[in-house]
Length: 73
Image (cartoon, rainbow, N blue to C red; front, top):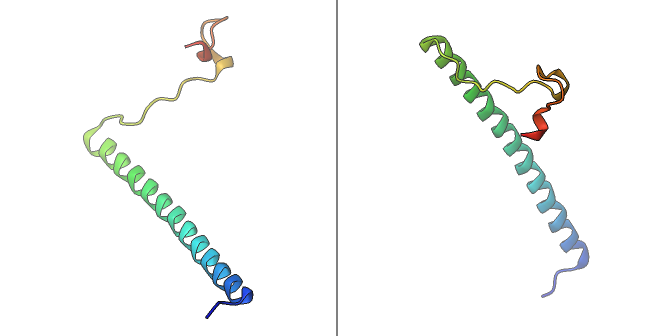
């Protein structure tokens, strides 16, 4: 017995809906993971009096050395 085109479209629409829900859930899981890791780093820095985060490089226009920009390195 062959499925009708309407049934196939309904199944595909349902599958798309499920995939979108899974994608949204993964995004929230990644956000939770990032927040937890950030808290862990903050606690470690506080408890052990250390700096665990990388320092950001200054913007190219704010260089202490005129003529040199961070993009050259």
